Amino acid sequence: MRHHLIAAVCVQGDQASIVGGAINFVKELEQLLQSLEAHKRRRQRPADDIDGADDAAPFAGFFTFPQYTMRAAAAPETTNAPTDEAAHRREGEAEETSGSKPSAVADVEATMVESHANLRVVSRRRPRQLLRLVVGLQGHRLTVLHLNMSSAGHMVLYSFSLKVEDDCQITSVDDIAAVAHQIVEKIHQEQGCTLE
Image (cartoon, rainbow, N blue to C red; front, top):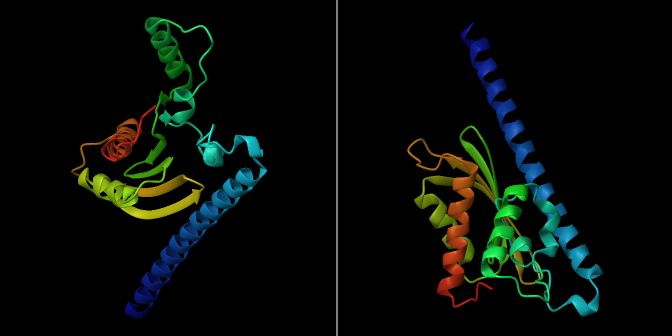
């Protein structure tokens, strides 16, 4: 009987490792697909659009419901300069309808199931940005379980699988997105980057 019990535990362990390996393989395939699609979009972009008018375009299709988006912040202004109050009101209305806050530095999307979260960040490449993101997330008790990175031109996409530790004060996807956005924003500010 003991022999059969040990064999059953080994089979369950093998099944768990197979499932875990399959999940990691799917994540790697997803990352490869993202990278290939970003490079394809970059090649198809007209030569007159090389100036970076749409910075997040290489990775634009990879966000379903981002909490922060550069597209809202980079919306072209009309020739009639609106009053600050009117612009602020429109910005608030856009945030209410889309659920995304405008950002000058990054697209950020977080999703969460129980104590595991997925975080995607698209930003301009900066020196030591990935290291500072990982350290910053871990400082908030968000352990990085898996990480993928794709780059296209001067833009980079980070995909994190995170474990929300038991003593973590961050309990929602909006909080996780806000933390990631603050880290990227601080990196850009410290490196003298304009946020406009």
